[in-house]
Amino acid sequence: MGCNCQINSGVVIGLNKTPDNRPIIGNNVLLSPGVKITGKCKIGDNVAIQPNSVVFRDIPDNCICSGCLLYTSPSPRD
Image 1 (cartoon, rainbow, N blue to C red):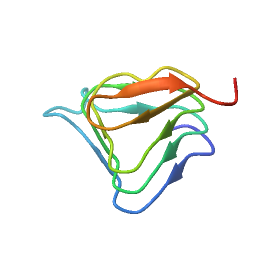
Image 2 (cartoon, rainbow, N blue to C red; image 1 turned 135 degrees about the horizontal axis):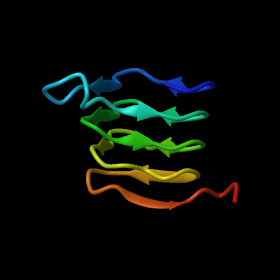
Image 3 (cartoon, rainbow, N blue to C red; image 1 turned 120 degrees about the vertical axis):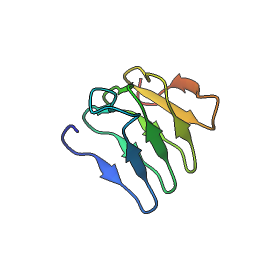
């Protein structure tokens, strides 16, 4: 987990069967309430994950994502 990450209540970060299948979380990441991150995936820098989202795929830098299907959009900071 990188620097300046904010983890809200109800967030679950988990492995998928083996320790090698763990998430990697970048810098300046916001994990809103109820977010679930599982398996081998990389969360980039400057990412905001909206409430109750389920993450099991990579998310590139400077994105906002929400939902179970992982819609991603460029950050308004760009």
